[in-house]
Image (cartoon, rainbow, N blue to C red; front, side, top):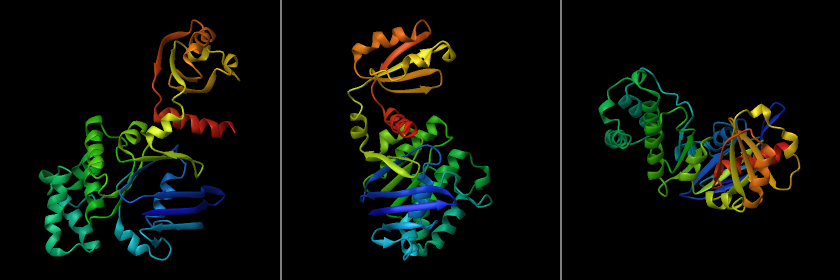
Length: 304
């Protein structure tokens, strides 16, 4: 459905995308995860024909982003991280306006608007102005706007960023309901979100894909490790030189005041705890998560 080959994009001296290669299948929900500046938004803007590539080839449904941008734009619904909604429009008027822009047949448009408002649970707000909406309600209308022309491909850029847990759950359940029917790209910083929703996940950093696979495949790469989470009384009291080049430790990272260690085996735990000493507040072992995979990939790049 989407084929990216040797894609490169630069902004001045900064290389946002570096020879990126990626194929996305029809009906697949692909997650793009990576730190800020990894190239996620640049990639989806090129797919959406908002930006032009410097080198390489991008095809969407067989169309080339340079030769057939209008055809591609008609195939895509895009919800950016900050939806640009017209504040003085009502929810109904906004959907009607964009429906007309996308050429939705007039004899079908009202039914489509009603269908989408019900889908995102906004029928009661149809005649309310958008400047009265909370961030969560704006996200819902942004999703409805992205779907107004019934696109084959939907791109979500941080759809739950800054939302309360209840609203985030509603948005995630809605995205899950679209799986299989639509081809979906989900950019997110939330690893649990990617784990729960995505068929495959691509980890990006510095414009390149570091790893790609199903959440299960990615986590299986560190399944042999023991993930040890040690909460410290005082992070500054830890003597890091004791941990340098230790063969028992495959990876080490910080999360707040917690030391996260990927160990070779359980038998190494007593020795590692002895190295830490009396500075320990609590200790837990955990199953590997996508966050562990992500941290390991990014840490490897930074060390190299």
